Each structure stands twice: as structure tokens, then as C-alpha cells.
Image 1 (cartoon, rainbow, N blue to C red):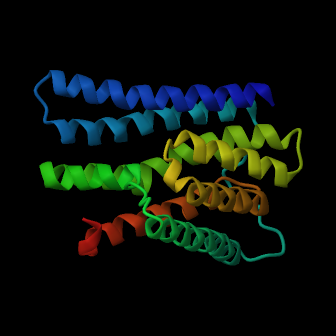
Image 2: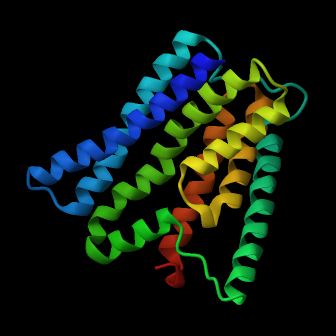
Length: 224
């Protein structure tokens, strides 16, 4: 268990540092700020995915294939998204309550980054969109539901494993105003991971949720 936990922590730090280092290197060699940040994030995610995949393969603690038994795969994904939708509704209600009390939450970190990028370098936004919709689901799921969840699951039942991994998933995003929503996302991904016995379902669900978020950001004027 501890080896998988350490591997997850190492991979997360590695991919974060890789993203920062690649972006910084690009800036030092004449690249524009937001283009380098976007490409740095995407390339860092790719590096983290490869490293985590190698560790996961070496430990042999998780499958990428689907192993659904008794419940259609699409039904599991649908139920998982209902968990996400319910948590996001509660997060929205909490945000509204805080706003009415005179404590409006700040923009979610990712949304603030998107807005700043659109304002400064609209053409660079494509790399952030790809990173959010594709890169993040792959690298985060292989770290949190691959290494971390699988390692914890060797010692604990699924519910404490889901709660612990979801808490860590929300915490490392460093966005206290969105903690409850992120926790709900992590829990939904852990639930479909448990139900299918594979990483493919949480990756698909994560990618669908992030893609929808990026799409809504692009079409809703208030989001920008």
C-alpha cells in the first residue's frame, strides 16, 4: 500500500514540476507566456502519465480494461455522473449562500487561468482546453484512481478508500472554495473505478466532465 501511495505522490509532484519546468524553459527561449504555460502543462501531463503508467504496470495493482459484471457499462457511467451532478448542485448552493452572506468565493483556479489566457493570448487557449479535457483526466486518474486508490484498496474497504482518495484529490487541487465539488468528483470517479474494476471508466467520466466544463466556458458569455 505504502509503495503505491509514495508512487502516487511522486508522480503528482513530478508532473507538476515537469509542467512548470517546460513552461519556464519555453519562456526563457523566447516563447509567449500563455503558449508556454499551456504547452508546458500538456507536456508535463504526458510525462506524468508515462511515469505513473510504468509504476502501475510494475506494481501490477490495477487494470485498464473494463470488468463490468451484471450492470451495463453505460449505466455505471450515468450513475457516476449523477453523483457528480448532485455534488455540483450542492457546491452551487453553497457558493450562492456564501455570496449572499457577503463572502463571494473567488474564481476556480482553472477558470481564472482560462479567463486570463483568453484575455491575453486567445490563440493559446487551445492547449489549455486539450490539457483540461484530455491530459488531466488521463494523468490524474492513473495517479489517483490507479496508484493511490488501488494501493489503499489493498488495506481498506471501498468506502474508506474512496473517501480518503477523494479528500486527497480535492486537497491537492489547492482550491478551498471548490473543495466540496472536487471531493464529489473524486468520489464519483472512485465509485465507477470500484464498480468496473478498471481505470477506463473514471478516465472517460473525468474527460466527459472536463470537456463539458470547457465547452460551457467557451459558449457562455458570463463565464468569460
